[in-house]
Amino acid sequence: MNPFLFFVGCARSGTTLLQRIVNAHPQIAVIPEMDWITDCFHDGKTWLGREGRVTRAQAAELAAHKRFRQFEVSREELLELLGSDEPLSYVVFLGGLFALYGKIKGKPLVGSKTPAYVNRIPALHAVWPEAKFIHLIRDGRDVCLSVLNWDHAYRTAGTYATWAEDPVSTAALWWERKVRLGRQGGRTLGPDLYYEVRYEHLIARPAEECAKLCAFLGVPYDEGALRFHDSVPPAYQESHPWRPVTPRLRDWQTQMPAADLEGFEAAAGGLLDELGYARAFPSPSPDRQEHAARMRDLFTRDARATTRPSCRERGAVFSRIK
Image (tube, rainbow, N blue to C red; front, top):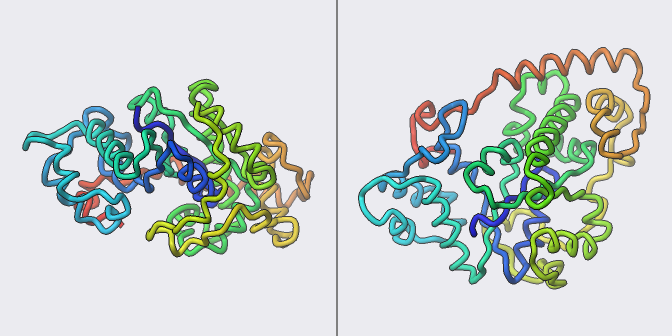
């Protein structure tokens, strides 16, 4: 049964750490991020689902893409998934890709760590109804600190028009949107298929949290998973710090300016309360609240108007995806 699970969450929430821990389990391999592949089967509004088809030419272009080398699957192995020259259902095609990756890694279960799928849990469930979902949630103020210092912010929160005026409020609203979408989509699946992990709990009590996670996945707990850092990192993650579970890499209590903190909490304080995160500013000033309301209105209109372009609109299939 692959894909066996999906790791999702707002970017900069620690999904890479969780991927490394689970990938070190002897029964589970975690495939590299793959939204750049599935976005090619998107009509501009919705995924094409089971109607999507992959041609041999498209598979060849995929194999030539610079990011595909991360999968450690050869061009020949990929083309063999199609068998004949007839187009193949992309659901079957992706299932075959998961199976190939598991075979290469010598593990029976294969998952995907693709944070962007936090928006798409219902769509993924419709395609793979037995797959499990793990939603990693991190205090949005620490996420904000990370995003503000991230070279790739322009791909995420930075895509919204409000970013130019107020990146802190934009990051707050973007984090809130991602978390709420994930929770709304996941909770419709029930506790057998959807599980939330708090980043703060994971780094404070890694063994305990990993044991709970293994129980949800139905696999034996293996303490060696927390020693993932003893192995050699994959080439595509060499630029990302390869360290053991390390607390307090981001700490809004000591690193976030008071003005930014009040602005963030004015914009997304409701979700902080809902998740049980203590606020520094339980009652932001009226000016801050008024500004946050204006930012929310602009952000919401932008979010509703934004759709990701299809491959046809980008003028390429696979090979030109950035």
